[in-house]
Length: 217
Image (tube, rainbow, N blue to C red):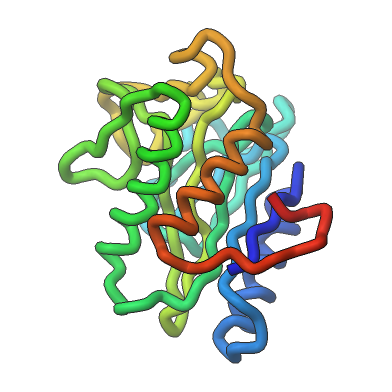
């Protein structure tokens, strides 16, 4: 599996990159890939999203520098911004078990957070990762001919105030939190990305491909 750290990437550019990579993966011309990155401020709506969970108009959001995008992933509405680690996994899903895939993504995040001393948990009936009543990581994926795209978003040290402009994931109870809020001072997003990459390879049992690229973790 190729693991690539991309730095900050516009949402539309990252979507195009995933689509191109997924097409290539379906034709078996490239290996499985994990893209790790950050986005400038953007609110995204999944296929099953209720637009009422966006509490401001697209124009109001734009005036504060936040884009609004409708996307092909599953799930409801979420926010991405600087200080949040986003992982897009483009892999040929072994076993063709979507439920297992979602649980494995949660395991990657749970183990990664534990590496930094944070005890996180699943919440019965929901997808994602919580610390107490507050969500620290969201998951939304897409499958096309058993190749995955989209993935997860882990709050490392983002500005959490934009989450007040939405009903995160359509869940009105609880709230959101971050590694910085829990630890007092968070590690860098790049440091967390390296730990997540290692845990991803471990959980999915896909050997990481050697790389000389500066983009690799």
